[in-house]
Image (cartoon, rainbow, N blue to C red):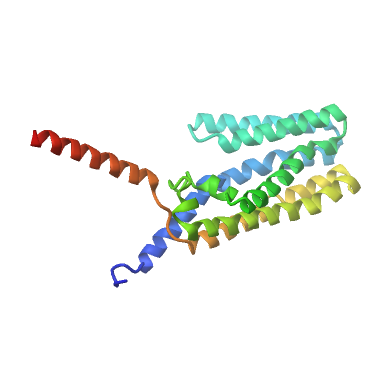
Length: 239
């Protein structure tokens, strides 16, 4: 390998910057975190004050819808806000059906458990879930599975990290669901929204920053199309 072939500090910096930008896009950034935390925070705050399930539930669903409306008005992506609406809606419906305010949190807890298991199982199956999520963001799709083993290894490490963190979170929350009251469970849930998420995203960044660069399959397809057009043009010229 010549000195021209070796990655420079600028290349490494660019790779880290691309990784940071992709993770920020995939997981919603600061705004996405606020949209994730706010409905649950409002629910537990109102319920702590007045112990009224209906007013707490209405406030949570209202702020979730408002966040979507704000995104639509600003012509911004709504996927994170919409996921928040669905999550809150399931919690509200479940709590209203059972009459137990604590059940507002149960669908989200079950989702966290299922997601944690999915990260572990897909990695054991050779298709790390974090790679499926981030592949399109990095414009590599599934090329990392067969053409970029170093990147596949990084995705596997990141998926194991996500799975372990989410399952550890469940190990705290499910005993509280049975033993704690609604306000205690709610405040612990709010406290555990952001720190585990940030830890998982940071570990993902660490693993991917050290991994080989993604293969831009879209650029490859565009290059193949240009080459094909050039071949056709050359053939017509020869005729």
